[in-house]
Figure (tube, helix red, strand yellow):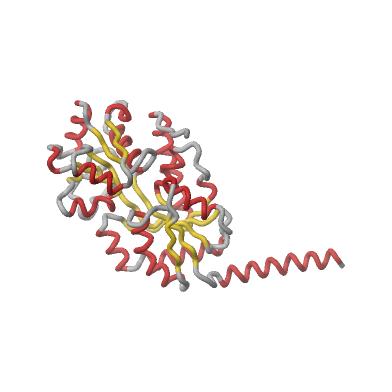
Length: 324
């Protein structure tokens, strides 16, 4: 009799869990943005918030939890209950670059379940119009002459890795030594460094450069895509014979803790399909140089894994691993 009661208790618990999942969501969902206000991740998250909230049918509470290159906010979701009420706006920096470069990161990719990657930000390399550099060939020649520097948003960030990866792909030997790295505090400061001549060039997300390019303040040399990017009159990496650079892109996705239930993940797939089809959202993001490309969970994980492996191989080859 006790055994039977025990079994019935388990069945009852499973039924309650299934019912709770079926009703999900019954309350607001906390959406963690692991970077500061005004950055690429924050802009993407807040732009999709309205159509996504309409699809979800419950309030989305946008919370910026900053620090450690996106790691602080990521850990909050890593350690949250896997019930779908704490989700993360994951980013290329927090979930591709940092895992590849930082030995002491407090999480791995296996600690998260991605429900979607929905935005791709091609990387664009740019210089000041007054630099005398008009093409990637000009830049590479100048680098080989010596004295060229590049700015980034900090050591171990996408911008740091991107400049090195581009130079390596274009045949510059020992790019970590041949060009001088000038880290800044954030992507805006990195662009300003090129504007005021502190640094020669930078390679960063097209969304971060869109306004500078539109205003004629920065001149784009290349975008890391097969197709041209709206607003950037520059050749693609494929045009220039470097198709491998298509792996060098920024992206934004949504993830939950690793044990996020299947039915909750499926609901997110439906909601994201609706949100990314919103014309106002798509138009706003494309004006910022983004490409809206919705990937399902399997596609998202394969894409992130491939990017991570590419970055990790480069980091190991050039000795860029950050041990501290």
